[in-house]
Image 1: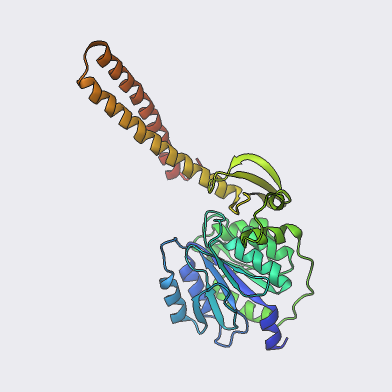
Image 2: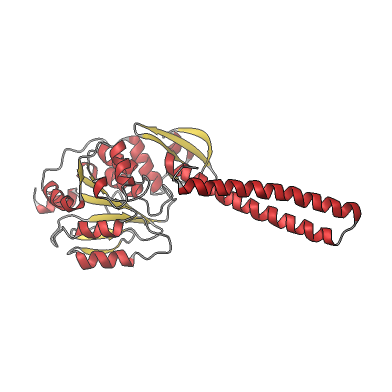
Length: 338
C-alpha cells in the first residue's frame, strides 16, 4: 500500500491506565519519525493533572511529534495526540479531532471506550486499536466495537503488563487479533500498516448510536431506548435512570445524558457512593448526639433525661455505622468486593 493511502485510510488508537507512562514510552520508542499514520492516545489521568510528565517522557523517547489534542485539529501522520485531562478525545465524522467535556464513561474522563468507538465508526476496517496496562475494564467495549467494525485489535500480554486487569478483561470478552509483549507491538504495527486495508463492513447501528451519544450529537430518550431496557438503577453520575445493554460479552449501563458503565464499574461507583453516604450519616449522628448532650447539661428533670436517652439512641446508630465502615475496610484489605 502506498504511503498516502495509509494516511487516509488508517488510524491507531491506544488506551491505557495505571502503568501507562512506562508502557507508552516503551511503545512509541519503537516507532520511526516517518511513521505514516496519526496515533491517538487516552491515558487515564486525574482532572487536575496536566499530562506534562507523560508528554515529556514521550517526547524524550520518541521520534514522533507528541502533543495534547485540540478540538477540530487535523490529524497528521507521525503525530501522537494525547487526550487532555478531564476531556474525552474522539474522532469526528470528517476525521478531525474532537475534544469534549462529555459525560464520564467507566468513571473516567478521558475514557478509552469513546475514542475506540468513534475510531471504529469513522475508519472501520482501517483502525488498529491497542490496549495496554491498567485497572478494571475500560477499553473492552471499545475493543469490541473495533472488532465488530472490522478493525484490528492488539492487547498487551497480561504477563507483560504492570497492571493486567484491562488486558485480561479484553482478552476474556473480545476475540483479539494479537496478544503481545510491549517489545513486539511496534514491529507488528509496521507490518500491519502496509498491508491492504480490508473492505469496509456496515457499521452496526448500536455502535454508531453510542458513538453519537458520546459526541453529544444524540442525548434523547429514543436513542438510548434503542440500545437496551430501563432498569431500576440510578446513574451515579447524574441520578437519572439507567438502561441495561446486553452484549455477548456481558452487561453495560448507560443513561440518556451520556454516562456509561460496565457492570463492574457501576458496582464500584455504587460502593463509593454508599461509603460517602455512610460517612455523611456518621457525621450527622455524631453532631446530633453532641448537641443533645450539650442541651442535657442545661436541662433538668424529664427534659434532661429525654435528651440523654435520644443521645444514647444516636450512639447506637453511630456504633452500627462504624461497624459497617470497619467491615468494609477489612474486606478491602482482603480484596473482597463490598
